[in-house]
Image (cartoon, rainbow, N blue to C red; front, side, top):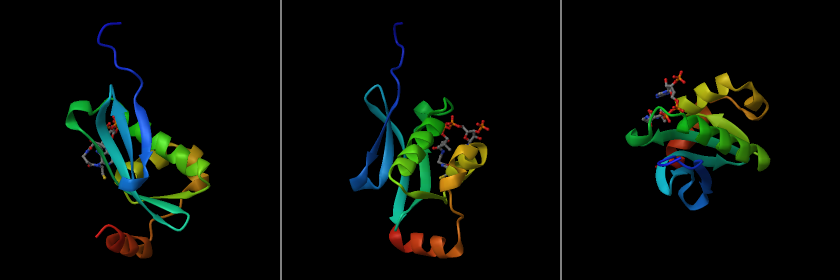
Length: 112
Ligand SMILES: CC(C)(COP(=O)(O)OP(=O)(O)OC[C@H]1O[C@@H](n2cnc3c(N)ncnc32)[C@H](O)[C@@H]1OP(=O)(O)O)[C@@H](O)C(=O)NCCC(=O)NCCS
């Protein structure tokens, strides 16, 4: 069909500590993390306004969490969007750890 979008692509960009989502070759958003040992701490998710409201954040976070699982790691959802996603997707509960004051303090330094 003319004008149809291709399937969005999600890549882990280690050098930028983020997973990026690309639509038709254009960066549409990202979810950013830092690693604390075997915990991947997600702290910010953003989808460009031009791509909002079509489920891209959900697709991005689903692929990111699947990659975390495949890497043998765990997830800490500081980002409110990722926290909400985890509440709705119990299939990731086994790899989710709670946000603690210690994690928040560590994150502040890690992203400074
Ligand atoms: C939040 C954001 C990433 C959603 O992107 P999107 O591709 O439009 O999201 P989806 O279409 O996959 O999902 C939309 C859902 O996100 C929810 N949402 C929007 N902003 C949210 C936020 N700050 N925290 C949690 N959930 C949020 C919406 O309520 C909607 O929920 P619904 O499924 O119950 O309708 C995007 O609006 C954005 O970049 N916002 C600015 C940055 C931001 O606030 N990031 C989140 C906190 S780090």
